[in-house]
Image 1: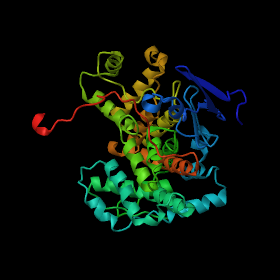
Image 2 (image 1 turned 90 degrees about the vertical axis):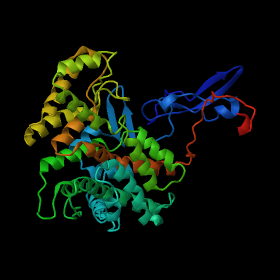
Image 3 (image 1 turned 180 degrees about the horizontal axis):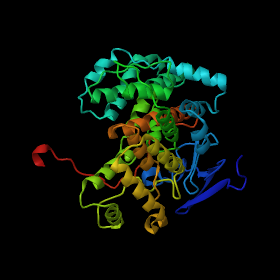
Image 4 (image 1 turned 45 degrees about the vertical axis):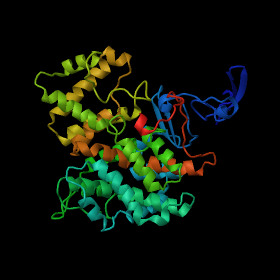
Length: 434
């Protein structure tokens, strides 16, 4: 329900002119002032670096309240979804608006299982990459490449095309990710198995071998399922905004998602969980470094050293996803019985962040990247696969936003304005006179 106390209009004065602006109400959270006519009527644009205070769309998918530490998908709390749902159930919720009943869930799950195989021609694609290639480079490239096999599904206005593209992307992404990993360690590619669940199938393709049957530990399945759910969507984050921006040109779903993956790869976004483990390694590998010294260096404004995985661009109190993983991490690490010095360092840093006034007063709590990096490592995933796992989890959110964007009649091709500060005009000189 829309809060009736929210303003219905606003006014802005530019010079001697006044313009009445429409206000879009929100069912919860901040309303938006519509400035789309500002240039046409007053000849000025707004200036908002990073679009931190600009809403580019109206959405019904995910709500984030950074001040209260709230995350909801289609109205459901992330806590309930992580505790009670599978990743594919949450994907269905994001894509279709409701949690599936038993019949819908079975049909949805089976439709995903039908499309897990990659074309045999794709093997040559993987083989063409050097062994040292980062899995994210392979993942984003392969996402574009598989679109070549499905040109019939490019039409963003075709319901059938969108459905088929969605099913194929969600089904094939674990296969692409696992094959990228197998390429990096020179092991044979493992084919998907339809008798396994989505997460079991991915783990089998990642860690299995063709010479033996492998069993997947239920604890690992549960842990990875929760991690994927916690990454499934997060509002208009940088990669999701990229998917929408690219898709606004009517680029097909495969190309739009590939662009989102490249945005996710950045260390300030999806690469942050990898940066956490690299930071822990730097502390461990330096004989002169202790946790106390690392914390002291992080507090020193003149020191370039930073503790990764603390604080969040949106959450100013705590990250609800991190709270879920904090207790989950202890259970996973205890049951996995991993003797890992980096995990010991991480536990010490987490205690400091919860108790040290410097961190508490600045709301520098451990975020989801801090705990996800720890758990991914405990589950046996190499560091360079962390962002790939993030991408698999975020995929349903990207697709749901791409679909919502195309269903919105207000959507226009993305084209931000600029404030030009360069030279106004110059006289041209032939090259002989320059």
